[in-house]
Every structure is written in structure tokens, then in C-alpha cells.
Length: 136
Image (cartoon, rainbow, N blue to C red; front, top):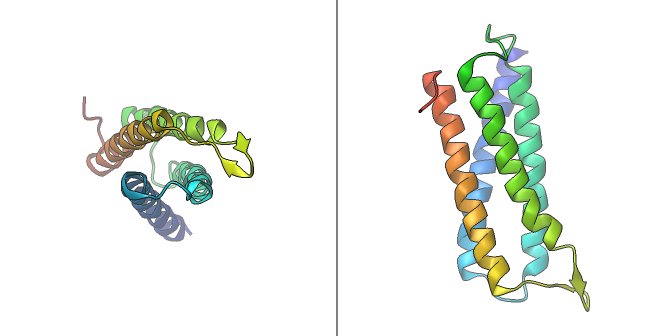
């Protein structure tokens, strides 16, 4: 059962990283009318982040780790930070203007910065999980 959970966890991590990377590329070249696609992809990313955190939590005790291990604490902090950052544009895009999501230039740049910080945070989590210690 542990191997199945680990496999599902790795698949969700790869989907999450691919989704964030594609969302960054999409925000650079997307036409102005594709706001609903951004909104939907952002919701999927939030669900993937939640599912990744749940499967990661299920792997702590079977792998003989504790929740007091430094890299696991750092992983939880970074995942919560990434989730909060990804939640912000999602909450701002809920304002509809004539059936189309309102999206400003400031919002697009903010989204790009949030996606870049989330990518860095998730790469740090992956690094810490591979080497079993924190980077700093």
C-alpha cells in the first residue's frame, strides 16, 4: 500500500510542477479572452496541491519519519505558503464583469510572480525530500 501511495504522490507532484510551469508559459502568451481557462487551471492546481499534501502526509509514518523532522516541517511550511499564494489570484478572479473574468495587467504580473515563487518553493520541497535535509 505504501508503494501505491508513493506512486500516486510522485504522479501528483509531477502534475503539479507541470501545471505550474505550463501556467507560467500560458500567462506569457495567452490571448486576452482566455480568463476562464486560467481560472479553471488555477482551481485544478489548488486541488493538486491539496492532494499532494495529503498523500505526502500519508507517507510520513510508514517511511519511519516523524513530523518533527526538519525537512518535513519545511515541506509543510512551503506547501502552505504555495497554497496561500496560489489561492490569492483565485480569490481575486471571482469578480465577474459581464460574464468574463476581470483581468488587469497588474493581475497578470502578480500571477506570474506568484507562479514563480510557487515553483521555487515546490522545487525546494522536492530537493529537501530527495536529500532528506533542508537546503538552508
